[in-house]
Length: 380
Image 1: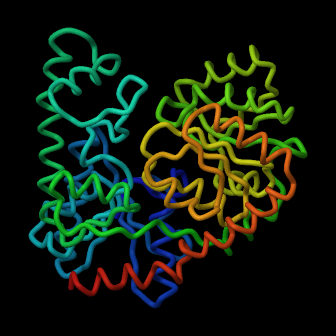
Image 2: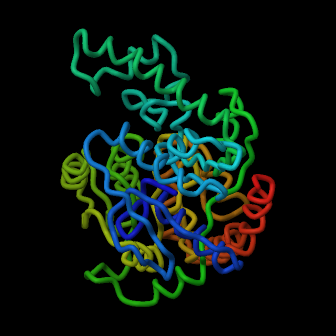
């Protein structure tokens, strides 16, 4: 169950789908419960889509909890924060596994980014800092802090009741253990490389340059949107930058590119098939993310397609790319240098492509489904 699920979804939704398909292929009876709109039969899986209006923070968990009352003996796997709160509100939380895909148990905003920089922890002073710019100034801002603190206590208490808490990376697992969450283990997201290769063979639905650098993601502070164009400009490759994503910094990225003379094609949000097709054709994927990345699905799909990657070493990114799956850097100048090397050294590109495909084996269904099955057997 998940509040996000395809056809229109980000990495969390597509990761939930990959798990559902992997379990079905292994012979399990799988059904999907979501509050995300779409068809009720997708990929041959039964998908129950709950209609929820109003304040989602309150209504989505209640909708999940109400539906689960009719499934008293099911093993439930909640894929995100609101579905987890709903599943763990029932009478059998010991039969619930929860996957934590970002920082929602330790950060109210789920990013651990405060005013463009990494926030060390949630306390009174850090919260005072992070409400600025997000909440209207004045008494309302101060009133938000007790609500934020209470929300985090509620989430952590709910996870304390779960039969299993599954972190998508060791970086996230470490956060959860430090927050006092019990029964934490690490199982990464699944990526079906064969499916990705098949979808990527067809031409994209729009024209792209023959050679280009690619960014996929939200144009926001935590995704490194402000560092994107400066790094590409400093690399001096002469290649255009294609951006698949949208966000509050879209205009700033366009202005940066115009001032730096970087050829830029911004397509906004793109269908997953087009994302895969561009990943397979890109000279390099630019990954300037500043937040502690839990386990980026964009990076996992890039590995499966053999895309050379230049990435900031944050959160779980090193777990994905080591050993040898891409070039890891610590700052914007390093990102520019990595891009210049990938574009300018054909031998390096070939080595990165081969290493990426080899690394992708660790995230294949056949590698990870047995680990999920072991968790479910313990919960029965």
